[in-house]
Structure formats: structure tokens, C-alpha cells
Amino acid sequence: MNYKKEWDELGKLDPLWAVLSHADKRFGGWDNQAFFQTGEEEIKTVIQKIQKLGYPKDKKNVLDFGCGVGRLTRALSKYFEKSFGVDVSGAMIQKAKKLNKQETTISFQVNDRDDLSLFEDNFFDMIYCNIVLQHIPSKTQIKKYISEFIRTLAPGGIAVFQLPSKVPLLHRLQPQRRLYRLLSLFGFSHAFLYNTLKLYPIQMNWLSEKEVRNCVMVSGKMLLVEKDSSAGEKVESRLYFVTK
Ligand SMILES: C[S@@+](CC[C@H](N)C(=O)[O-])C[C@H]1O[C@@H](n2cnc3c(N)ncnc32)[C@H](O)[C@@H]1O
Image (cartoon, rainbow, N blue to C red; front, top):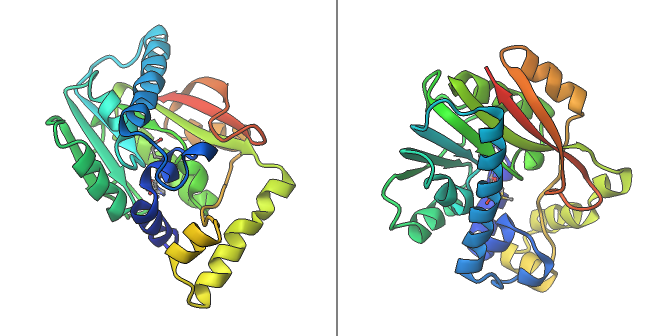
């Protein structure tokens, strides 16, 4: 996973902004409390939605896939007995542990595998994944994680994940990211590229709603698809609610 090292660099340079990239919060601009408050609000809304759908049937285990520094894991832990946050980046997980020391029911782990073999079948009552799958460069890999969500979901459990359904052509070119990668090949440090040139390495991927539906159909059941705005104004995005 080549992109793992970019998340590691960002996890060291500006972790909170890398997680929630509000323009005015770049270069360490997030206040911790305000940052975690966004997680509380997001999760409150999601929990209300899934309760309306009649899920989850149990509240033992929840997974926050691509947890970053635990913004959403902390909020999810208020609703479940045990919470698991996994992330591809060791730097993000280190920061998550540091910022959430007081949270005794959360376990944060690095998962840089292309699956969720860390976890057994039918384990999670809820899986939540926001603004993560969109950054995975391979569409095949995104589909594999979706199948893994369904495999590890308990009967009566619910997976809620976000993914762009279409990225406009101009947005796909991502000149900032290309320049960042090119200059890092020439030996420029990540800190210089990020802080001085203000470049950013992360890419945006998507799957059409039809592709996601087809992938889910193999082993799960689509309960609801909602329009979503977490990928920004220019990117059409969806929030999927899935059970098995
Ligand atoms: C924009 S951040 C969002 C973090 C968190 N979901 C939130 O909203 O607070 C994206 C996170 O996904 C993680 N990530 C990227 N690819 C991943 C993968 N294949 N497996 C697990 N985490 C991944 C990154 O390291 C980063 O922490």
C-alpha cells in the first residue's frame, strides 16, 4: 500500500486537518474540543437514522474503519460496549491513542492489510466508515473492503459507509497531488512540500451507485442510499446503509 506512507506523513504533519480538511483549520488550526465535537454531532445523526431503520439489533461491538485520530470512534463508543478503530497509518493510530487515553472501551489498531482478517465473521453490530474509502486508490480494493464489512457484520448489524459516486473530470486530474508525488520523488521533504509549497498528496476515488449496489448484493442487503455532502460541493457522494 503505497499510499500508507502519505497518511503516515500527514499523521505527523497535520493530523487533525488531514482528517477533517476545513480550509481555515490547516497547519494545526483545529481546537481539539471543537474537532471532537464534530464527531459527536455526526454520530448522533447517524445513530438516529439507523434507529429509525430498526438497527442494530445489539450494541456490543462497533468498528470505525479508517478511524484517523478517533474523532468518530470516541463518539461511537458512547453507544456500544466495545469500540474498535482501525487505520492504515501507524502515525494516526499513535495520535488516536494519545488523544483518547481516557476512553477505556476503545481499542485502536493499525490495519494495513487488504482485508479485515483481524476480525472474525459476524462480529460487529455496527461498522461506520466516513471519508475513507474515497481515498483508496484501487476500486477493486474498495469493493474488497465493502465485502469485508459484510463478512464481519453480525446478523442484525448495520454497516454505514460513504463513497463518492462521481468525481468531475477536472477534479480527477488533481494537479496538487501529482506535483507533490513528483517532487517527493526528487527528494523534497514532506514537511517542505506540505508546509512551504502547501501541496497535499491525497487522492480521491469513487464507485458509481450501481457498482456499490452490485458489490453489496453478493453477500448483503442494501437498506438505504442517501445523498451525502462529506466529499465537498463538487463531488457527488452517497451514504450507504447495509445489512446481511
Ligand atoms: C480523511 S481521514 C478520516 C478519518 C475518520 N474517518 C474521520 O472522519 O474522522 C481518512 C483516514 O483513512 C485512513 N485510511 C486510508 N486508507 C485506509 C485503509 N486502506 N484502511 C484503513 N484506513 C485507511 C487514513 O489513514 C486516514 O486516517
